[in-house]
Amino acid sequence: MNKRMYAAASLALALSVVPATTATASPGGHARGARAPFTLAVYGDAPYGTSPSDTSEFLATPAFIANVNADPDVSTVVHVGDIHSGKQYCTAAYDESIAALWKTFADPLVYTPGDNEWADCHKAAEGGGKYNATTGKIDPVLDPATGQPVDHAAGNPVANLDLVRKNFFPRAGHTLGSGTLRVLSQAELPDRAHPEDARYVENVLWIKNGTLFVTINVPGGSNNDADPWYGAPTASQEQLDEATRRTAADLRWLDTAFAVAHVGAVSSVVVTTQADMWDLDGKPAAHVAGYEPIVASLASHTTAFGRPVLLLMGDSHVYRSDNPLGRGAPCAGDQDVCSSDAWNSHPGYSVPNFHRIVVHGSTVPLEWLKLTVTPGAHHPTTDTSFGPFSWSRITQP
Image (tube, rainbow, N blue to C red; front, side, top):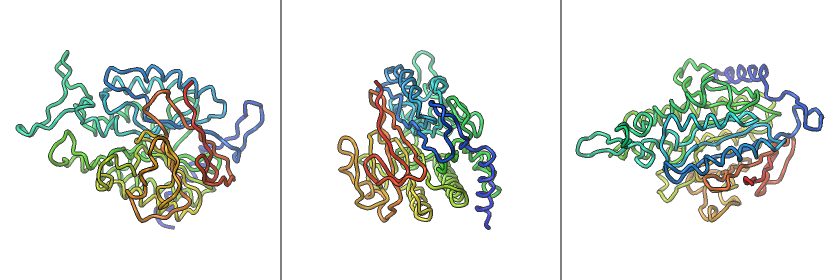
């Protein structure tokens, strides 16, 4: 057994000590065992605002949370990133306000960070700043009342990711919201060869009723490697290091998750990221090349696993259900999203036991995806089902 498998076996043992499969009582009083269906509420790209002063979606969020809380089927909430828009500032006060809102969820909440709350904070539209070609320095966006930078750390993405960790991941292995879901964080699994992985507290995994869930911090746009911070002529060494180190840690976390899936009693895997890694957004394919290592890893691991793997993501805002690892696979979605064949962004894959869902976000009424996992089920691949997974879209009343 190699070092990776030893790590996987150790992780599987740890999961058996703090499982997410404990039998509970249903609203009707019937016990629900380890093979019973369970339901998650998945959403992202919310709350959004059209400007720093637009709080309409933020103010609608308490009622949205109440709508999720009112569904007795939901046992876990998943937020796929972007807690504000690309036209809102990156501040400690805002992050704290979202963390306070999330405490009102009646169930545990698992969150993976989006680009708008850290990777894109350098942009002037988000309160960061602009590169000054004359001085070679950054001119930050200043608050006219105080003369100080609007954004936390003048929009530095690394500092803003640390701020996200402080507010949303204060204790490794613990979720947000309410409830007692225990997850395992990459920060809790020391890797002697890569001790730097301990900083990625936001990467977590857990197993429930035979399904393994894993989150990886992959921000939308270009994986933080194709848009030089502050509009500078080239990416700084700090930016290049951030993207390289995080991507490497993400890949090792995927290796660990699928190793656990192979040695444990796992029949399906759910991967959660923020980035829509296939969305060109009007740019050339080179713009998303930074995602290729993640895409290749997903394709390789899914093929070797041989059982259903579902990818949940946000970022591109518009609902989409398809298999971007299956050339020419059917697609369902809103607006005209299916007019662009996702597999053209990362060609060369043919993985039939893979499916992804882009959850709808950024618009009102707010919306969440009701995702039900039925262990042992073999639903056909349709617009709303795949293997043990079935889902429906719920809009806020």
